[in-house]
Amino acid sequence: MAVLRDVGALLRLRGFRRLLAVRLLSQSADGVYQVALAAYVVFSPERQTSAAAIASAMAVLLLPYSLVGPFAGVLLDRWRRRQVLLYGNVLRAALAGATAVLILAEVPDWLFYLSALSVTAVNRFILACLSAALPHVVADERQLVTANALSPTAGTIAATAGGGLVFVLRLTGWGSDAEVVLVGAGVYLGAALTALGLGRDQLGSRGPIRVRFGAAVAGTARGLREGLRHLSQRRPAALALTAMALMRFCYGALTVMVLMLSRYAWTGDGTEGQTGDENAAAGLSFLGMAVALSGAGYFTAAVVTPWAAGRLGPSGWITACAVAAAVLEPALGLTFAPVPVLTATFFLGFTTQGAKIATDTVIQSTVDFHVKREGGPGGLGSAGV
Image (cartoon, rainbow, N blue to C red; front, side, top):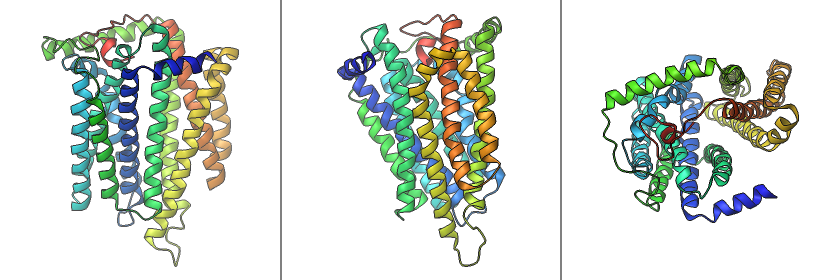
């Protein structure tokens, strides 16, 4: 198959292999850290977890993507990208180590969340840098298309595997929450060391760009405003993004629901004869199955979507995914029973990722992108699309 040939050609490129290895290690560490965070906040027997605490943990994981993301390119254009991958992962390893210390010290929640928020904020820079570096380790535009499809999918699988490792470690009784977080710190450090295999200027940097930070941020804000104006004139892209935003909102709400069910409704919490540790282990096992099934749904969507979108069109496939989710999720989820709800997590992962892939296609085919290969202040060449 042509796709397999393209993937094989990519893997023969040393720079691409090294950059992919950095991504896999970095995102697997993300999976370890994020699931360890959830395990500590939600499933620690000594903590009386509330819906507000779970919502706070979700905000810690998601806010940097909304607040830091639009401005990531401004700073990335001022630093060598190889150095961002190196020092960014070293910084995350240090911050993850600090999070482990805070868990052991049982500090106030706000200090713990501040540490976790710092780790996920740096993560936004790393992901943007990985995307921006891709054009500099592939040979031509055809390979770039394949690389853009392969790398994020492989990263998602790595993050799922990292989260799965946490479940295995905790369910087999290995280590405390703090020790598991330290495992994530070690993997972050491995990603940093792997980045050393890339040339200092291999990822397209020409050295620091002499642009005042305030002017660069203001330029980025203007670019966002102009982008929204441009999007308002591209109805298919605007509708696809709106649909995707609504589906992501529902995905987040249902994720919190599964967390709460795993912690309380499915573990026999409060039943005579069961200990807090037993309840936590049972809840973690349910959550682990939910993560695995959702990841399987993501992978299935990556396989099915090219064919389905070819038959229905990208917009038609987004509609089909949304309708399927609207029918299946209430039918399965309103039972609040483990088997139907866990089945729903597979379909939720499948429909959400299928719509996401099709949304990317709609945007790329209807929106005018002015991409500079070397990147510039706030340019798409730096932060990725």
